[in-house]
Image (cartoon, rainbow, N blue to C red; front, side, top):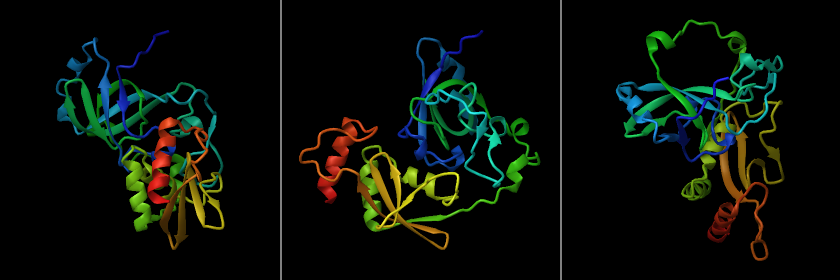
Length: 257
């Protein structure tokens, strides 16, 4: 059996699937691919910068299992689908393919946007997107033809924008989480996207709480809270947080308390 080795690794600010939308063209994330040095891969980039889009073939490196039935984010309300009829990342071989926008090629780096990949994704191959061969607008789309999407407009209060911008300055993309999770199909019964509390609706991401309200197909992000309430005697990170996360929450708590 052939051994596949990455030719490079994607670098971006998003490390959790909740931060990315279901498709790259819905993402505001920019990224770059660092090619592995010592194999002359950079020579293979000659003439690539003449294309506006490229295909990336990569590994879903955070997934170690697969599922024969998938629950895709868009639904026709007729139950789960066979994994091969979806783009679920939980596949027998954790191989993904995405068409991304090419911004520039600089030495051994490829700068891109419209990417739904996560940080440190191993890249196996790069191919140019050629509309003449790769685009089939009249192709049948199976069960997706019966999907009616429930789309919501996202608005932000001044205090939520201030807090999101502050957290973003430490490379934590709460806006990406919000846009990914709350812009469509909020009331999908197959997913628990949020909880209802006395304060209002809460979307949780790691140790952050995002308070919001829903009215007439509009979502208002009202405020952002930390799950840490008192740092006077608290030195252990919560959940999957690390020491950096704990430091950010401390600074956030001090600034906004």
